Length: 401
Image (spheres, one colour):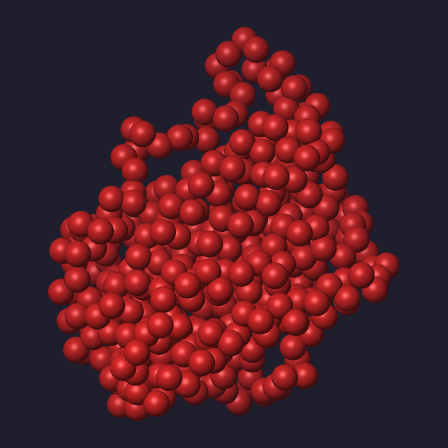
């Protein structure tokens, strides 16, 4: 997963969908003040800021629902284990057939190691500082992988109950994590060898981020959790794909290959998660529709929203502005992802829904155009500048926001 800007145009809400079987009669609630921690509040990017006039809410008074999946639905997910083994696990690749970070790094045992490092550094000289801000932000979030497996293991009905469970859901979670682990390893070592970034500040940011965790507001509910991961994996594939394209444009073709490899992994993982949600729409269109609406109303909070380096309390916001300005990830991308998923899951053509779910359907299908309008407002804010910000990751050099 990469660190992607928060760009959805709808406010978070304190209460979720009422009176549907995927929610318990008396759901457990936890105050948002408990889960906010001591780190800065979730930063909003240009596009999200543009939506503040839509609705405002005092988050200190809100509460979050926990364990919203009914016992019947938990059993449903357990009954899908055979399907998951046949339909989801094939998206994984055997370790021996996977690329490894060392395949794309200078070989330390080779006599040509130092020459290879000098060549790598020479190529990196062509990359601008704002590119490194985006690449470092993506790498930091990839390195926070322990948090993401923790998140998967909160999901009722699909979590790994023992840490080594043979359940297909658990096998997927561990193997997905193992594949994703290569991404941060490769980018971290590559950035270290460039000599262009402050590795100690980056390492501190990683430690802060893993320590702070994340809260995607998925309520330990796999309906919401797999919708979240479907969206997030596609967003990550887009982000890494754009850093690949930009590296190529700047003349570093080997780095472009590295970012492209990671993007391809993310795309494959996206296909697995979207397949799961597709199955949910097939067997429970009502619950899947309400879940999709719920996640889109709350916004897709990004994995690195609690990013902090010990200096900049608004680090994620500043990083996101650079990503928006450089085109690594924008509000337009966010809208495009939602539009893609609506088509992928045939959301518009689903029939036989309750009145409540039909309203959810209308809301979700009408959201992409609305986000695109907000993107235009976000771009106008970005263009107003000039505004710059210093990043500790690049030795406090300033880049345009």
